[in-house]
Image (tube, rainbow, N blue to C red; front, side):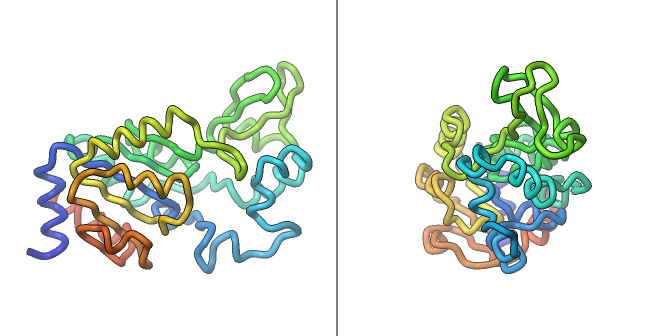
Length: 242
C-alpha cells in the first residue's frame, strides 16, 4: 500500500484524528515563515526580528514594535489555502477532531474550522493592558503608531505570545488532551524545533504519527509516515478521497 493510500485509510477509519500545524500551513497563503531562507529571520532590520517581537522590547519600545509588527506580521489580504479548506471538510465529515496551530493569522477559522487551538494567540484579538477592553485587528491597523484604548488610554497589545512570554495554560492543556486522545496525529509545516510546542508531540500515544514537511525534522525517525512535500500537495490528495 502506498503512503497516500495508507494515510487516507487511517483518516477514514480512525476514531480520532488531530492536525498540528506550523508556519508551513500559512506560507502557501503568502505569509512567510520565520526560519526558512526567505523568512523573517533572514531579512535585515534595525534590530533582529526575534528581539523586536519579545515582551521586553514591546515594553520598552512599543512604537518600534508596532512599526515592525504592522509591516511584517500582518497579512490582511491572506486567504485560506487548500490545506485549510481540506481540514474544514474533514471536520465536517467527522474526520478531524481538532486543529492545533502555532500560527497567529486566524486562517483556520476564516476557512471554517470550529475546533481550533491557537497556541501562540491571534493577531485578530487585541486587549488594552490597563482595563482589558477588547479590540479587533482593524482598530490596531487604523491607528498610527501605538494603538491606545478609547476607554482609558492604555496601550492596546496584540493577543499573541511574544518571546519571553508563556503559552496560555488552558490552550496547552487542551492541546495535550487532544494529542493524547488522537489515534492519528498529523503534524505539518513545522520544523519541530520550537519549544514548548514541539515537545507536545511526546504526549502522543498512538502508532499513526504522520509528518508532512518540506525538509526533515528531528522526529522523522519516530513517525509512521513521512512526506517531504508541501502541505498543499498532500492535502490535495487527501481532499480527492474525502
